[in-house]
Length: 159
Image (tube, rainbow, N blue to C red; front, side, top):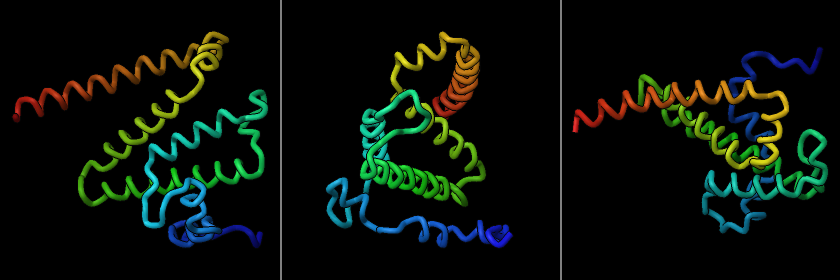
C-alpha cells in the first residue's frame, strides 16, 4: 500500500517529467544535435521508424532491440509524449475549442504512425479477419471529410 500515489501527485507534471528524464541532453547527443537545437517531431518519428526496422523478432509483441537501441527508443517515445503534451497545452486558453484542435493533432499523429507501418503486414492483418478496421477507417474518413468540407466552405465564403 505504500506505493499507491495520491491523486494530487499526478497533477505535478514537472515532478514526474523531472523523474523520467534521468540524463538530460542524452537524446540530443545521440541524434548528434548541437546544444540549443530543438529536436523536431519529424526527426523523432523518423528515428522511431528506423528502430522499428531493427526489430529482431517481429513475431513477439513490442520491439526486440539491443540495450542501446532500446534506451534510445524509450527516450524517443518520451520526447514524443512530452512534445504532444506541450503542443496540446499551447492550445489551452487560446481557444474555446482547444479539444477540437487537440483531437485533430491526435488523429494526425495516429495516421502518420499508421502510414509508417509495413503496408504488407497491415494488409495481411486486415485480410485475416480484422476487416472491422476497414469499416472504422471508412466511417472516420467520412466524418473527417464532413467537418473539413464544412470548415472549408465557411472559410472560403469569408474570404
